Amino acid sequence: MSPKPDVSEERIEQITEAATKVFAEQGFDKARMDDIANEAKLSKGTLYLYFKSKDAIIKHLLDKLFEREFADMRSQLDTPTNAREKLLKFAEIIIADLQNWSRLIPIMYEFLGRLFRQSIVQQAFKEYMNTYLDVITPVIQQGMDAGEFSATDAEETAITIGAVFEGTILLWVYDPTRIDLEKHLRSGVELLLKGITQ
Image 1 (spheres, rainbow, N blue to C red):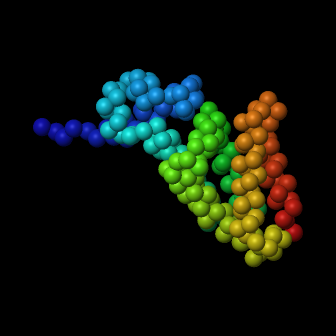
Image 2 (cartoon, one colour; image 1 turned 90 degrees about the vertical axis):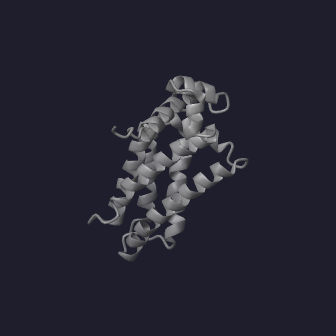
Image 3 (tube, rainbow, N blue to C red; image 1 turned 180 degrees about the vertical axis):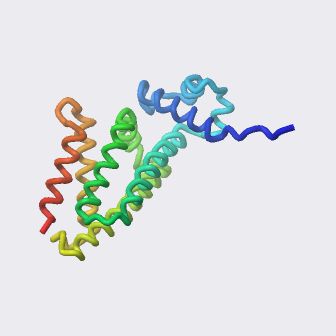
């Protein structure tokens, strides 16, 4: 008798797809685990075998997004390009991911509203921020060491670039009719790089 196949990854994908749809339609607070189980066509008991709460599901979604984004960014670290080109490539990676996950962005900001009340959310975003700084800061330092950038503090510059992204995304959430996410992210990074390029 052959062993049963492991369907864990398939089930997790099924649940996260269902949860994304339910969160997008109902918002994070109104969505119930029952709704997610129904959308995934699973029993509630099966859903709880994989995720104990909505918080756990959204943390998984965020981890999945950040994990892929940072893997793509790290793949650029050893390419034979200058620091400016690497940062522009990082921006393109982030823009591509945001396009793929655009329906989740409002949910992420709803989730951010819980940041100061939920330790699981604080931890997810703290890990994201620290990983982002660990990837971006050495590239800026590379540009400073090569005389490419006039910045004097690599981590401070990395934080500023992150603020351009986070701020532009938030403005887009406020009014997507006025903010062109792709265009304004690119122009914001270009303006910042222009300001620090020798």
